[in-house]
Length: 104
Image (cartoon, rainbow, N blue to C red):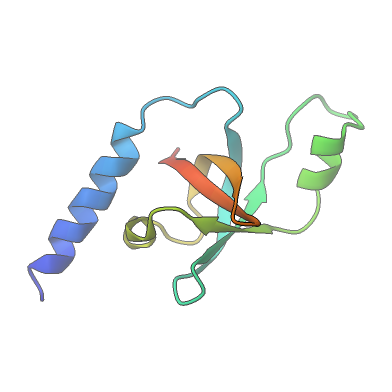
C-alpha cells in the first residue's frame, strides 16, 4: 500500500503537467475546499477583466467559492487547499464538471 501512493501521486502529477498550457476559455482560481467523499472541489475564481468592470463574470467571481465535480478522481491526490489553478468546466449530467485542471 505504501508503494501504491507514490505511484498514484506521480500519475496524477503527470496528468496535470501533460495538460499543457491553458486552453481558450480556461478559468483561474484558488482551491478553497476538497471533498473527496462527495467528489467535489470548491474554487474561488480569480476576477477577470479590468478594475471597475461590471461584467457578469466579474460579479460572479467576486462572491463565494463555487463547487464543481472532478472528472478524474485521481486528481484529489495531487491537490490541496490554497493551490492556484487554471481549469475548464463543462456541464455533464446536470453538474458542473472540471475536465481540465493545471496547477499554476
